[in-house]
Length: 411
Ligand SMILES: *Cc1c(COP(=O)(O)O)cnc(C)c1O
Image (cartoon, rainbow, N blue to C red; front, side, top):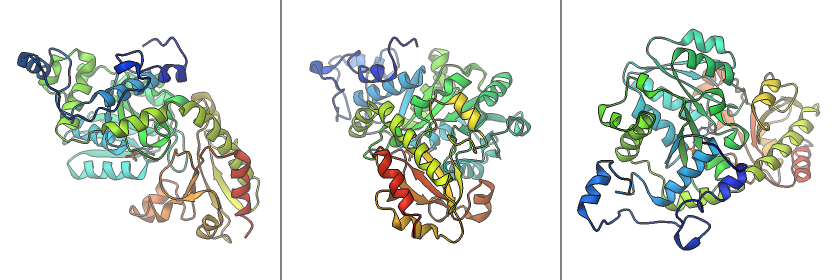
């Protein structure tokens, strides 16, 4: 899709460029779960895919469609399906696209719940190889004839490892393997996975796209780059669509219609309004994240800071090449004499809470919370130390944030 305007202009005016009720600048919230047709034959044609239209709220809704269109524009993709959460979008990959005996190569540096999801797939007869995706050779070595997809995050949450996205994309293209990128940590404002050959892009809309911590949502975008005719798991029913639409047609049926993890119209509205300011919020929070990370790195009471914006980060140069900025998330470790919980309790602005990509700065001791269930051994494999603190910087004034993280060092 060629875009005439810049990122924010495009999103702001996206609804208006389609039919818009009464000239409203936002797509209104449609709460109906069904739609009536004056001609019963028309309803049959909608069901048969011969004309477009809404059937039942589980499969689609005008407010949700407007958001899907917006996410598609943000990602420069072909089409998008929204889900009730980011995890529902990732679950849809397994449910709609993978079968028993299939193999997935996944980055080992992964959002904890996604790692748990791969464990579930393993229990259902799938196979998953977890590899260090900062090294394309490890991805290549793990490929088998049964490999159906390679799955990576852009900047891994929480240790901020940056996957070797370009080379993995080239590898997948050469082997005809579907490349799936979870773009949540960067968001389409900082990075479009389409530019490195991703076929499908995952976004948790709950995080920086919505941005205000008031609605859950997720999305899968088809970039149009993957040739679905080479993918073995598409049912004949969905091959009646033009080939580029096979995967999303199957996902919409198998994961939305049959599984029902649908995004509600009110949540879609909150997310769409939040998305209007993502560029402004990301600029601010990325700049503040760099300022706070630099302050912490320079302090002798801090033993390590993990942030791609710092020169000390192993993928600093790669991140600068790939991303518009380094995002709002970093993690750090204190010297052993400072207890991480005591430090967190001394922070006055930053809120101890899970979640990220919010307007408000959030902090959490990851090994004891979101990564607790998986145990010490798997945490160690993911580079997560017991005292690691994850920080998601918000849009507070930069000086206030630097001061807060500094005063808390002074016991
Ligand atoms: C939060 C997150 C998800 C899951 O999104 P939810 O909307 O919370 O379900 C997936 N991937 C990454 C990288 C995340 O940070």
